[in-house]
Structure formats: structure tokens, C-alpha cells
Image (cartoon, rainbow, N blue to C red):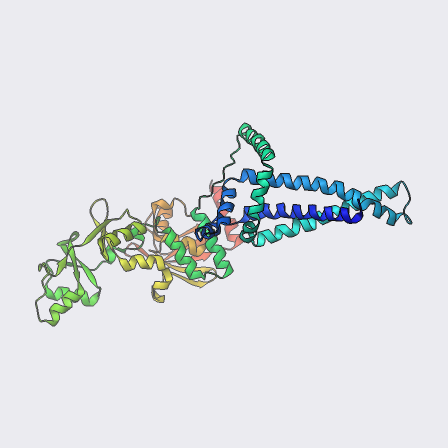
Length: 443
């Protein structure tokens, strides 16, 4: 054959290798979410790609058959195509026995370089950049190749499956989407500028709603303002003036005997109409929605939606009121800093290495703010104040501190045994090393 014929064969083999290389990378890198969206829009090619991804054995087998066969053929044809011409070119400068060896080596290097550059590196980089587009274009000819090589595909697949069984190697791919996958996508979106920091935070909190208890969003028992059935009109007006709210719990003698709720608007209407205010009036007091403190935020929202309520009392296993929660509280827990005035933010950064935190800050918010993966035995507490109690094994006092995960958590304000505020400081490398040495010495 002439040089032109050999060159055409080499180009054909390079093109074939390019096809199989692009197919391999494109089908492996194509995102199922994008393909399912295309398939739902009626693209049959996307359905074929999804089918091949679900059954990758035939696909990988035909790709490897094609790549290896083309590589062998390329070596054979390339050596015979280029060696005589290279040998003729080198004859004036190189003599035997080195002439034949050098000509063969240069021919081998030339063919190998062409395959590496044009048939391997370039197509794979293109396929990685736009995997779905490439996969849709190549899936039909790839299906034809699988049909043509079906006997070989069946033979090698059967042999591989037997070896996998013998070695007890799992080959089924798990495509279940986990919460970690979703967080990774959101992190990538934030890095790419698609999501800003607040949007990412809100979306993360939405996914955490099933694990965060309702007690993390409620107004705690000690902070409640409520009415008693026995309260006089003057007492009711005083409580509204001192601590105005839209709704108030109504109790009988003590907080734990809940009789219902009263809306402040109804009380205002009574005042404007010159009527006496009495909480024993059944028209003023409405029934109160009661939920257990074991519910998560998502379960609480579901309760609120089904009952069309926006206010609920939270009780524990002993039927004691531990707090109240409103629809706005649940919204604030999800929206975070978006829905809170600046003076109500629970975590305030003083600088890059120190933060002021309310004692009632949920431990999940602390983990996110400080980039801490996990707190020890965090099923025993819900807030940063609870963490301090758990670590100190006592009621915290001012200046009490705990060192954990490279941070110093110091109590700076206590009100009637309640941890109001903490100062969190990042420790430098020397302090962290000293902490480890002390821990090793104690151990």
C-alpha cells in the first residue's frame, strides 16, 4: 500500500479511538439529574444514555474492545507506514545496525504521540467539559457498536461476572442521592457564585429541619408572658404593656394548666368598645394547639399546616409546658439571619477569631458558624449553653470555659443560672498543642 493509503488507515483508527474515548468519559461523567430532565422533555437519546448508565457492563466492554483493537492495529499499520520513509530520510546520517532500530523507534513514537494527543487527551477533555451533549451525540452509534460486537461483549461480560463473584466484589452502582451530595452541590453553587452565602445557609437549614427539634425554635418557659383566668383587667393591661404580643397563653392558676389563647386584637376591641375584659368570657379565649417537645421543625410545620394554626404550646412527657412556638418562630429557624433584626442575631462576629453567642443558640448554628463537623454526644443537648453544662458537669458560672475543636468557649454572662452569653475565641497553634499535651498527660 502507498503512504497515502496507510495514512488514511491511521486517521481512521485515530478517529475510531477518539469515538470510544469520548464515549467512555461522556457516559461516565453525564449527570443523571440533567439527563432525567432531558428525558422528561421528550429526548429519547437521554433515555438511552440513562439505560447504558444503569447497565454499564455492555458499554464498558465494547469500549475496551474498541480501544484495545484500535491500539494494536495502529501499532501494526503505523510501523509499516512510517518506518520505510523515516529510514530513507535517516540513511545519509545513520548507518546499520542503528538505522533500522532508530527508524522503528521514531515510527513508534510518532504513531503513539498521535494516538495520545488526538485519540485520547483531546477527546476526553472535550467530553469532560460537555458530557451530556457528547453523550447524546454518541449514544446511537455506541448502541450500534454494542449490537455488532454482541458475541464478544457477552463472552467477556460473562467471564468478568464470574471473576467478580469469585472475588466477591460488588459491581452494582448506588445512585441514591444523600444529604451530603446535596450539601456538596450547594457548596459548589456558592463557590461558582450561583448562590450567595445567605441563600446557601437557608437551603442547608431547610434540609436540617428533620433533625432540629422544635425546642430549638420555641420561646422557652422562663421567657413566657401569659395570662391567668384569675387576672384582673388591670393586671392584663399591665402584662400587655410590659410585654406586648399578638397572642397570649391563658392558664388556670399556673402555667401548666393551659386553657387556651387570647388574641391581643380582641382585647383591644373590648377596650375601644368600653367593655370589661374578663378571661372567663368564652368568646375571648380560643382553644390552644398543643404539640410534644419531641417533634422536629419539619413535623411541627406539618402540624401547623394540617391544623391551620400559627401558635402552639410545647409540652414535655410530664405534661409540663416547656415553651411556645409560632409559625414565625419556625420561619425564623429556617430563614436565619434574613428574618432577624441585627440586634437579635444569636451569633455576632467580633473579628475573624472571636464571636459573641447567645446561650440559646442552636448547636447546629454553632457548628456551621465555626465550621465544626460535630460536637461530642450532641444528642444530649440542643444549644451551646447545653454543651457547656454537658462538658462542665455543673451549672456554668461567669469565666467558666471549655476548650474544644481549636476554640475556647467562655461564659461571660449568667442570669439566674441561665447562660445568657458566651465569648468564643479561636485558639492559635501553640495553645492547641498545649491542650493536646495536657490531655495526653491526664490520659
